[in-house]
Each structure stands twice: as structure tokens, then as C-alpha cells.
Length: 273
Picture 1 (cartoon, rainbow, N blue to C red):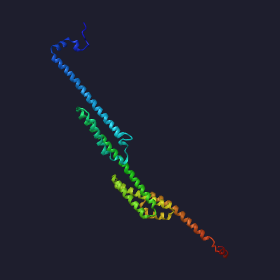
Picture 2: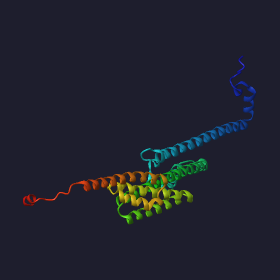
Picture 3: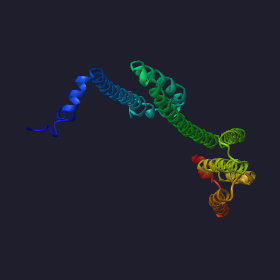
Picture 4: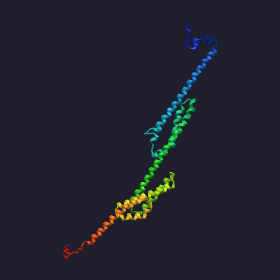
């Protein structure tokens, strides 16, 4: 007669069946406990699946709202990115609230903790991106202003009042910009000197292009204190060449005029003319 080995304790052991028959209440409690354990495991699995689904939805929101290379926040450059620290947290809160609304009560606390951590991450990214864009934008604006001051000085090179005004405006702009960045006074002073020297060089170049080497020489003598050594020496060399050429040409003309014969009109010439 087969013993039933391997078919399970409840089938293979007649004593268990006899015990269950003798005590049906205890047997029912055992089945109920097993059912409860299975149900508890299923609920835990359902909760875990709900959390993973919610996480995927947050990932989808983040990819589309932040990381999309055409329409996401990462595509915002310059001034357009300045508002992100204010808009991103609110947009995230709205999306997270909508995602959490359909979750079972048993996982809401876990979801809230996860959403809070994700909110801190996206807010930190928005702050960093906006700061980076603001820094780059401010530098671009500063360099554009420097170029504008330089162009104006070169354009109005023959107007000392306008040139001095452009230099003063540039110095104010440089001091304000660098102080806003927290630069030390030594760096600010050096930048002011370099920018002023650059302006003087532009004025000198403009005067030479206008063919006024003597005026350029006078300007260099008057403003040498506002130039750095390299710019001064370079300008001095070029201006000296231009002045020597000019003076040499004038001297040669004077010599030719001095040795030329004195042509006195004859009576015939007077009659002809």
C-alpha cells in the first residue's frame, strides 16, 4: 500500500486528517491564518507596485518638464532661466499632488517622503541652472557695454569731453560689476586701469587712422599715466614712426621749395595770361 510520501503532510499523514476531523475549528483557524498571510503579502505587493508606478510618473514629469532638450527647463538660456527657481517647485507640487491623489492610503506617507526628496532635487537643479545662466548673462552684458564704450571713444576721438565721459562711464560700470561679484579691490583697480588703457589705445588708433599723427602724439603725452606699460610702448612706437614720416615729408617739401628757382612772369606771359 503506498505510504503517500512526498504528497504533502496533510495527505500523507492520516493522523493529521484525523486531527482535523476531530478539531474542525482549529483546522479552520489554520486555513484562515494562511489566507490572511497570503492576503497581507498581496497587499504589500500592491503597495510596492503603486509606489513604483508613482515614481515612474514623477520620472516622466521630470524628463518632459526639465530635461527635454527643446521644450524643457534645461533649454532655457539667459534671462529666460531667471524665473525657474520660482516656477519649478510650484509645477512639481502640482504634478506630485495629481499623482498622489489616486494612491491608496497605505502608501501615501511613503509617497510623500519620496516626493519631498524629489522636490529638493529639482529645486536645487533649478537654483543652480538659474545662477549659472545669470552669471553668463551678466558677463555678456558687461562685455557688450565695454565694447560700446570703446567704440564710442574711437568714434569721438577728436572730442576730449566725450572721450572722458565714455572712460568715466566704463570705470563706473567696471567697479559696480566686479564689486557685485565680490572681487577684491586690487583686482578692481587693475581692471579699471586695463580698461582705461584700452580706451586710450582705441582713441590713438582712431587719430592715426584720421592722419593726425601730431594730435595722437599730444594725446599720448597727456594720457600716458592712464595706460599700462605695454599699451604705452606700443603706441609710442607707432606714433613715432608716423610723426617721423610726417616731419620727414614736410622737411623734404621745404628743401625742394628752398632750392626751386624763382620763376618771375615775363611780359609775354602776362600778355598771354
